Length: 450
Image (cartoon, rainbow, N blue to C red; front, side, top):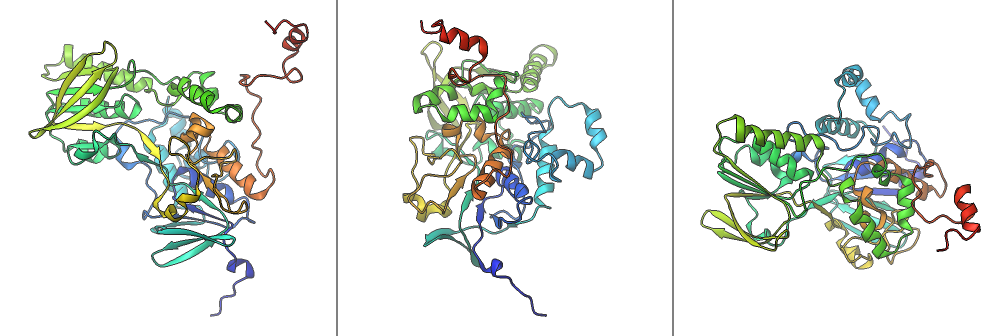
């Protein structure tokens, strides 16, 4: 049989994606409504699997299920979370469960369902190198290559390990991204968890649920206390397009201050996690016969870690009173967060990409990297704009909106409505022509000049 190929098939892809996580999965879904864009996404893993090492029992999503891959910009898409529930005949059961927060396991199954159905995904294909020549990128993998005019990087963030812990990584010192597979077989008597955010809380919660073999549990946090996520309506406005557009206009120091001020809208503990841990500690101390000595240590910085026989000694500075403490542990779990880094495949392009002082690529407003190549060959970056675009960029909340922005940039027109909503908060300084009537009157009368 003779297969006919069109001239279009022989042309480079309009865009190639490196990595298939939720962000590039969102983009692939939106491309279905734009047939004129030829896209393909590559992933070294054989199938989609969202943070499997952190999928411990009872963990919950910290954002609304409506902030899925598509709904905020294309609610009629067949790849929405609601469509997933309908396809699996459990919409009513889900609604009747009346979840305060969606189980993360459920959302992971939704993502995997989409990845199994949407077009243009190539799993089991690791991009080894990317070269730019003339007017295109050449992506090389083990059994061939592809060509594309544009790239989008969606490899996600990598586990961050502090320098003091790097020499000791192994079976009894590991990042929480491996927690699910490691915690159940630890058998350690003394365990230290470093990191006071949601990931650290989930590790502590899991350890307390099966605490028979532990004699000591120490939870260390740099923060002033084990603080809840700020999930109130006004604070959640930072997860909105209008906030991002206001944030983009700030200077570097202003962005740093805004990021610091909004940290607990993203990196705080879920109320349910706080209650679970506190109540379990109460039960172990007052209601059940337990030999566990649990110590919660906020305001601490680990400044050194060293081997002590078959265990570890941690030198810790107490920022509350300035004291120095020595802690001992058989196992150390690092809930120390994640950092974006360029994939190894971009090694040959790295000298042409401009990085900021945090080691992140400098991004333009439309999520393209600043690089020395031709302007019509763009490199988009997903989840790399924490400092340039604000705290929401590394979260799921604006994933669909960011994908819509990328599609619009490729097309050179507003295919998706990516304009901000009429938000409740006025972030930026209003001009006299745009501020509300009451303020405008005072401005013209000189009332706001003092």
